[in-house]
Image (tube, rainbow, N blue to C red; front, side):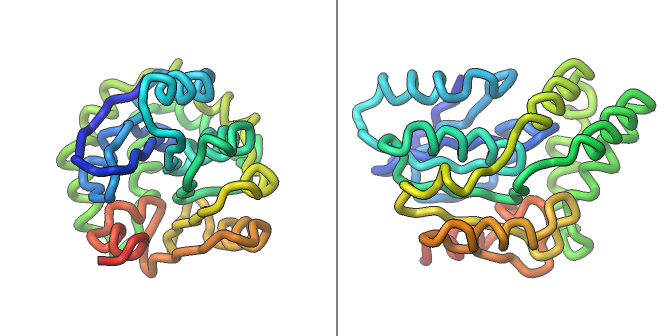
Length: 227
């Protein structure tokens, strides 16, 4: 399921958010594409939904941006359908999440969902990102705390327990960019660096003093595509 945003651009970009977020987190993003914002309840049919999207459109290839959890779905699709993919942007990515980490998150949710999510959201922002964090609190936090169900959150943790970034899935993609915050506490930048080294044609773009959501920085588009 996708929400189309016509930005009067030539190229098209699918954007997939991370765990405990939805497509609204991309509201400040200004990239030179028309957007297809993933807003489905789960990623279990992601490949089929992207294929259905492209069947209804007239362009042969699409660009994909996956953030955190979304990066796993984007990478897997690129590996299965490289002929349909023009460019892959992987933001705040890890090769995999250990089951022990996911079990600890599940236990924290079951103990106190609100407290768990508030702590997780705060960890997504570096100390130097108070402006970005205040925007998030003002626009999204209250709704997320109320709307996200335990079933949805734990179901996504189950999905994450099976997910992995495989460099081999990216070998046939001409343009691959790993975009990462140097102060990311959720996905340490060393993991992105190792993945980039395993994909020879890729580029690592590091944002200094940025946390898990570097796309919230005003210079994100310039760093990726210039002026």
